[in-house]
Length: 148
Length: 181
Image (cartoon, one colour):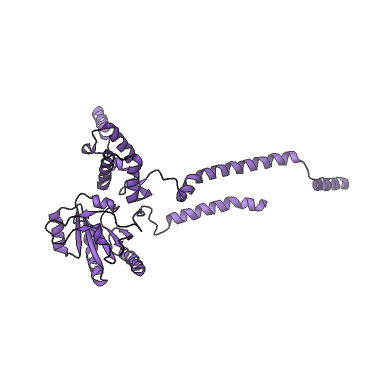
C-alpha cells in the first residue's frame, strides 16, 4: 500500500504545462522553445513561467514561440516579438537599460557601502588606540597631575 | 559630524520604511501589467465577422480616422463581460462614442445568442476564434477595453470590467483622451 502511494506520488509530481500536441518534431528547436518559455512570465498567473502554466494565453504563447522558431527566428527575435506585445513585464530576466540600472546595481551599491562603512569603523578604532593623547589632552592631564 | 553619523541608521530605516509604505499603499496593484501598446499604433490584424451575425468584421484600418473608438474584447463565456455590457452600451450611446468588439475565443453560435439576448452595441465585431489577434493586442484576459484615438493610436488599456469604480477610472481615462483629441 505504501509502495503504491509512493509510486502514485512519483507519477503525480512531473506536472508540465506543455502538452504533447505542442511538442516540435525537431528536438533542437524544441529545446530552444523550452528554454525560451522558461524565461517568459505567464500574464495570467504571474509568478509562473509559461512553460509550466496551464492558462490558455500561456499555451497560445508557447505555440507562437514554436511557430516563430520553425519560421527561422533567433531566440532574441522571439523575445522581441513577445516584448513588443506584452512589454518587459513578460521577461523574468529584466533587461539592462536606464530604468533598470537601480535594480541591477542597487545590491552591489549596498554591499560595497557596507564594506566601506565597516572599513571606516575599523580604521577609526585602530586609530583611536595608536594615536595616544592630543597636545591639548596632554596639557590637561599635566595640569591635573600638578594639582595633586 | 559624529552626531550626524549616528543618525545614519535612522535615515536608512526611514528610506526603507517609505519604500515599504509605498509598496503597501492602497490603489497600487503589483499585478497590473503596464501595457506595451500605449502610444503605439493599433497592431496589425484582420478579423472576419462572427458567423451568423450581420455586424461586419474588424481590421486595423477600421480604427484610423474614425474619431475616438472603444475596442472591447469580450466573450459570451465571460461573466464580467455580461456585467459591463450595459455600461458600455450606455456610455457609447450617451457620449456618442464608436464601440467596436473583438469576440475572443468564442463559439459563433454562443456569441450570436449572447448579442441577441443583451443587445448589440458594436459597430463592428471581429471574431478572434484562435486568440491570435488578442495576443497582437497584448490581451491577458477578457474583458479588456482599449481607447483608440482618431490617428489610430492606442491611448489607454483597461483590463477588467468597466463597472463600479472601474467605470469611474475608465471615464477619467476617456475624458483625458477626449481632451487630447
